[in-house]
Length: 308
Image (tube, rainbow, N blue to C red; front, side, top):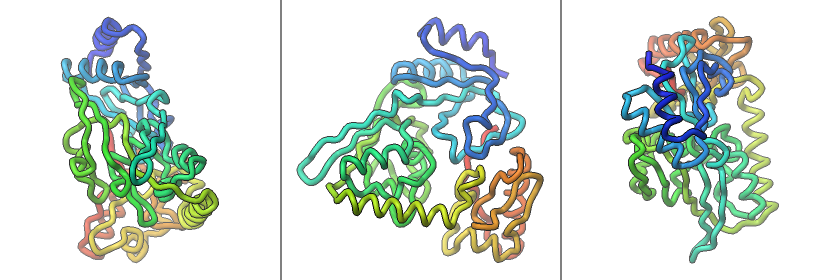
């Protein structure tokens, strides 16, 4: 185990305003509402605090991770012997500037996609409608190139400002340098932490934008089990297939392990139906993978980040 008291002394010696919470149940911070505790949780309020924490964990070789809205993350019941770093609401600012061929929106990565969508609606800017119903933060969406209903982050990102894993420097990545792919970005490889993104959008009609957002929201709510805790689509889409169909064809719709269940509404979702533990969820993920592989030869890969 890392030496928490020694770590706290080092952090507070560098910046006495940084707040460190100990032994934090991560079920409170993840959309699955399950999982064990983290050794420490730090909500950083600005870039300088982020750099201080990153420098310290790097110096002491302490396990650590960045957590966004927790909508794609599951902590094992055994917990996480490390530091969870969460960008606070101070990283959620938004500004809009006109450019030659549209508008540039600069947004902090702690902002929720749903919140940003509402702001852009008021500004009558179009191009972000696809993301308004995705239950995550902008940072998480950049990290995994989130997408829905024919749109992806790569379609609108101009650049991303990020901090190096050791906290030593800032860098601005162009859209090309982000190397966006299916549920992938360069941030997965280099460990940089996104703090702000510049998005390219166009002027639109308020009523048309609102109607599109409403249409996509109704589609999502009718086809996805939004009334239960989950992490969205549990598995990545295998090339040439749809994960939900493979799972349903394998006879797994509605199958449960403990309090975890393959959704009866959409088989691509594993839900926390009845006080599931992280172990229940992980065992059900494994059961689904094995059954689908036995039936089809396709090994499903989790889209959910599993920590611990």
